[in-house]
Amino acid sequence: MKIVKHIGSYTFEIEGKSIKDMWKNLSDISEVFGDQQCGACKSENISPVHRVVDDNDFYEMRCNDCYAKLSYGQHKKGDTLFPHRKDKDGNYKKNAGWEKYNKPADVDQPAQAPPQKQTKKLNF
Ligand SMILES: [Zn+2]
Image (cartoon, rainbow, N blue to C red; front, side, top):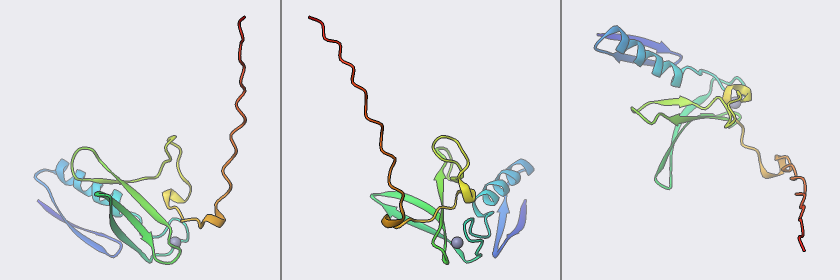
């Protein structure tokens, strides 16, 4: 079985052995290529980017206008990707996960950790 799916400027030929197989493949492709515009500036001038750093593969969608990027994680099983839309605490990031690179001058000062209270019990 084969289906042709258009997502924005892309055309995919999706193959599968069964309707469930096709559905899964359609879902995987829609999840990865579903963003047709930058989540930060709404530009449609976006491109998939693949980088290799220290033998690790990085997949991201990048905005060619404001340079925001949506990074993708890799499923442990299979050869599929998923967009990082949540932070490490499980909260949804703003702009649907599209993040702008902040120049060091624009980065907020890191919150200073409160001084640790040190209570020492001295036993004599
Ligand atoms: Zn943008």
